Each structure stands twice: as structure tokens, then as C-alpha cells.
Length: 180
Image (cartoon, rainbow, N blue to C red; front, side, top):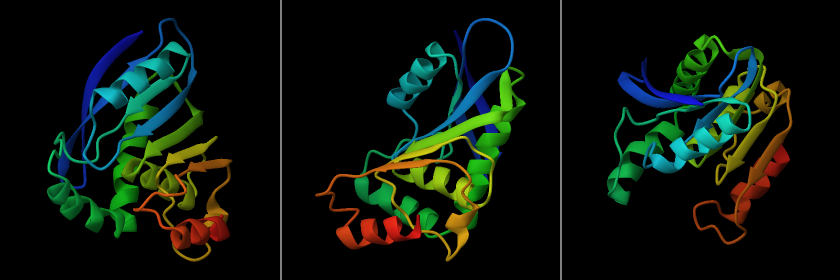
């Protein structure tokens, strides 16, 4: 496996992602891996590496321009406007998708998107915008989209959220389930 840092523009920032590529030759399925609100860290980098060990080209993408938010209030002040702006989320997702598709080993017809928190919301927005993904998986990201856009999702969606999660109250989980 090889890994490298990739820089790319999105949301007016220089994003700093982590690309993990299995050893060998030939096309392989790709996976976009989105981080939680504080940003991309070694946890997501190791997850991308683990996906590469399983035979996937994996990009752990950035949402904060290489920044890690250690102050929860500062992070929420940055993330909440992003979560309220569908187009910004989609633009960040498309920029990461372009990086993954540009890797010569990536099979552009076999890409999945998974994410945690904000990264999961971005994965869902790519699906709602009609991106041809093979699967979407989210942890703690049961955001709802614009009315009717869930019909654009053409792949299985797996969403996990804790029943006692204070950030995703029951009404939000129910609205997400109804939308899907």
C-alpha cells in the first residue's frame, strides 16, 4: 500500500486529504471517507489505510482546510453554517470526488461514500445530487435534504445514530427515515 497527502481547492480553502492506494496494478473500487466536524485526523487516515488494505482506493477528505478544531464552540460556529448550506457541502464533496476519480487506479464506476458527522452529511448530499455511488454510509449524520431529492439516491444507504444522541434528536431521526 502507498499513501500520500493530496491538496486540492474547495470551499475557498486548500483542503489536505489522505489518499491510500493498495499495492498492485489495475482498477479498484474507490471510497470517499469524510471526517467529523473537528476535521481530518489520524483516525480517518488509519481508516483509509485499512480500506486500502482491503483492496479499495480510499480518500480521507478534508472539510476544514487542513485545520483541526479542538475547541467545540469554535468548531460548531464553523460547521453549523456549512451544514445549513447544501451547495457548500456538495462542492466540498465534489472536489474530493474529483481527487479520487483522478487517481489512475480508481474505477470511476465503483465508488462509495462514507462519513462521520459532517463528512456523512456530505456523502448524503452527493447522493441527493444524483452522483452515481455504489453505497453511502453515515455515522451520526441523519440530515434531511431538499424535498424530493432523496429520490436521486441510486444506491443503498446505511445510517447509524445512537438512540440517545443529543445532537440527533428523535424527530430528526424520524424525518430522515421518512425522507429515505
